[in-house]
Image 1 (spheres, one colour):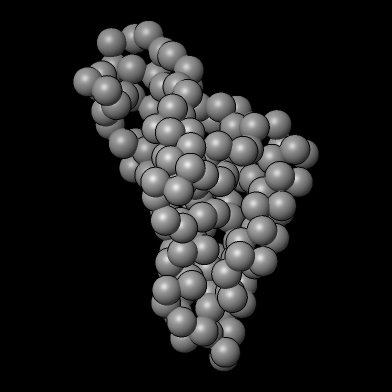
Image 2 (cartoon, rainbow, N blue to C red):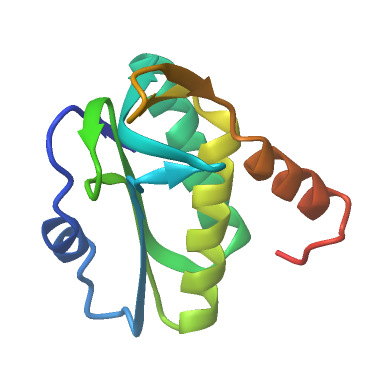
Length: 151
């Protein structure tokens, strides 16, 4: 798990996961979009408590390795001010087969969204801003935990 104030480079990160035993690679990129809940978004700001985010992120990746037969997994999350179209979060997973890679990648991003101390502030075109809580992420995780959504 990494936190960076710089640009996330998905191709470079994917190359770090290369392994001759891998038959599959699955990656997820979360981008900054220009609207949310009917409001035009100008940019986002991420505030991260980095020591805990890294520790907890490593626990998430370790849990993914226990739950799924994967070879490698990594997650990088941005901090600071981001513009529309920038990559805010990247997850990459390699495994022998695609199903495990897809499942582990989904697990990691879902867990990162609900467990890591990362706060998102949206800056709107109208001039105001607001902190956003990831209620959809938490609802998704609650449904998964209750068995309504399969892992």
